[in-house]
Image (cartoon, rainbow, N blue to C red; front, top):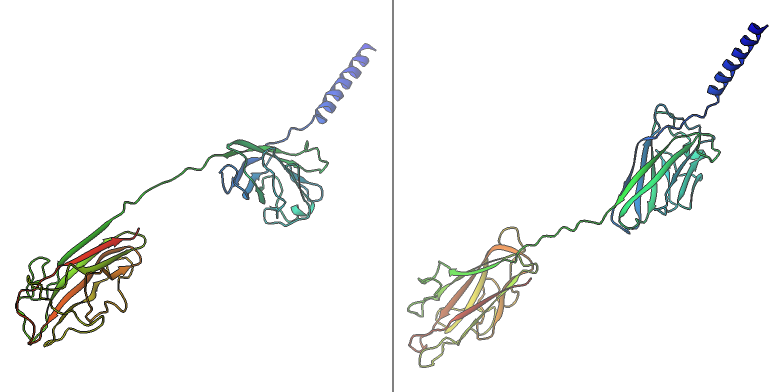
Length: 334
């Protein structure tokens, strides 16, 4: 009898052990490869997009379409109610955003590959960043949809909000202006315009080449004026041309200047002669008032302008040594 009781006791113990093992709670797996890619990490930035990505591990729990839920919870980001998409499925009416908790269920999971071993990504989330710091978003799955999230998997995603990094640089202002002999005249020395002996049969001419380079945002302008009307030491003057866009001619007393662009310069703004005042191929009056003769609206490199000084005399022009000086002023416009 004792043997029979011993066998019955052993059998009960064995059954109790086996049944206890069968009803032990299963531990949830950790979702893997989890991350939240944000469009900006600047503190207080508004409208920042969040793309949450994670894997349901092969040992994890699949999400049946009819019942499953996915929840994102955070105390740090107040997500806007936008078009939330799971993988390529959406938009969905079954997306609820409330109290910083996002719940996806029902038709948002339709056609989505939500089996164990699947990669999931949730897009369409936007929020305003908090202040600088480290924050977390908890992602949980609820296969049976009972709202407890005890039967699914979970992971905590970390988000770092940091101040932006200021990048600064400076470019030094540059400007160069030089005056050289034009090279086609009567025999200048350096920048001097030496016209020599004048006669009624020809127009004497010589000039300067002006070279300008600048990185000024608004380009530059060049003006010219003379220190006095061309005259002798006894103050006998030579007549100026009648006005702008006229011509100095042989046999007629008068002097003036003409201007012409020789080179626009490399990789810069177009250099232009002032319209209606110092037009190409015409002669213009030069006097003691500064007149703008050339300009450009932006940076230039090695722009070259020719200024030609021309003199004609008649048979009645008084003899003597005539002189004046030209003053060029180049102004960069930063």
